[in-house]
Image 1 (cartoon, rainbow, N blue to C red):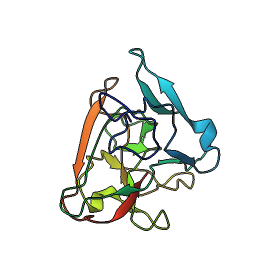
Image 2 (cartoon, one colour):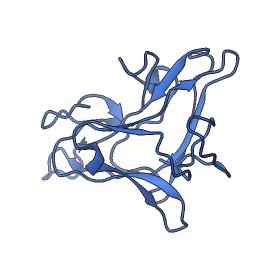
Image 3 (cartoon, rainbow, N blue to C red):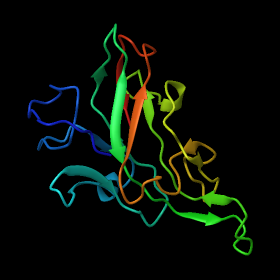
Length: 176
């Protein structure tokens, strides 16, 4: 995921956009082995981004934003560009027309209580998820809609903009 903006400021929690160009890490890596899964990386154009590896075993990790104060009288809008490819296979390998099983996937969640509880962002806006994450190998996201398979423009980035309107007006939220 890469947030777009033209400049950055190295004062922690000083701006409303994050393009990951600052040398400050304000997003927290959470979950078992998160430091092995998530890393800041650089693309071919020299832009910084977060990268998650295809971990070899079951994992439930996240990147968590700092606390964000939502305006009391403006829409809360999140925009990013991302690309992803997750393990997918036909339900029946002997029948190429059978539905796909999405072994892996990701979701976007919002918390308005400091990270105590989390809700899927789809409660507030349509993230454009591609399918339901399979109920396999005790996947912590099993049976949830999420980003699955690969993004439509793979290997290029797809842009996502979520406008929650005033549903979160005046609240302090975290995003993961």
